Length: 457
Ligand code: URP
Ligand code: ZN
Ligand code: ZN
Image (cartoon, rainbow, N blue to C red; front, side, top):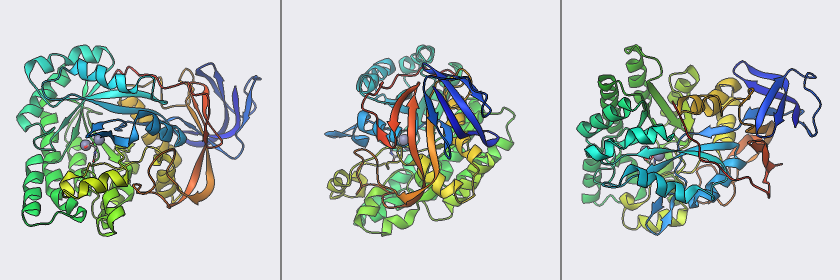
């Protein structure tokens, strides 16, 4: 198959060219007119040709009460493909006392045969007993290259700094990387208690239970621990300009490249805390951790992403229907499941608000959504680039289309942060390992199904 006549987005920017695919693999990327003949020619005139995007942070089917986050693996992966994302990295969350390999098997059991895009798993560690940490090297051998720890969520997922240090040492010894949710769980719990004790239980109070100082303290502490242990670190969903400053300073002062990384998510770039005052639906949709912050932080984070001071543009996709959040809200904001959707929106919304506005060039956009997530998360030389030998994960994108955004697949309109947003850019066609999975904006009937990806740093 040859995709002919489009503008290929590379690190140097858009350039006209053709992409040749044989079976599941890209076999050539040529200047216009240089491609050999093919059985099947796709006309990409007027379109951008992108690598299938990679979202390094999703929660597709996290069991929660009687339901699951994000409506489930199939529904979320449909939204991913329709939104131009062909690979996601989700989480196998191990409970306290649960062997990590059992957690991985359990989460793979939920995803395999159901998910439609390719996927990997980070392993969330909530218990640092010797026998847990001893399980890490074998998991790394099996392609589980990244682990996650929480400084937030006291009494549920939170690790103390002493526990986090033990985890970092074990992860570093195993040649892996640690992802950290950097908010101070003690500080959040104290703030939450004051709010609840004084009857301030409405959703609009949620951000006050996650003060800026809590993230700033946790970011500073985890950077110190990374320096002390040498453990490669990605701080996930950074939400404050001040956190970015801390990361920049830490990077300046350490001599090894690529071990202190920062991720920013769609909602922290382009939505702000004004939504908590914008009525019931908007404030419910905006309940996530860290919360949406004051306007201005998003612009700082976007500037950091453009400048290379942040590395990854992800989503932390953890969608809940408005009805689910509303039902929980009767017990107070602290009972509402945290998380926002975004896996279907990431490419079009970031194109609209960063690329089409001239704040980010197309090459950097593709770097932060495709190439860097692949390289940093252990999928280098397989995913994230249009290049010889890479998987034929390919997106045809119409940069000129303009319309109002509507959530994709079975995503919940009422629970969306993005429904109704005027957008520029449309995902037209998508191939996953050479098979067409989206045709003219619709899911193809015959889906190859997603594969579990072993990842190696
Ligand atoms: O609100 C969020 N972020 N929910 C998902 C879990 C997490 O903290 O990443
Ligand atoms: Zn988190
Ligand atoms: Zn998350």
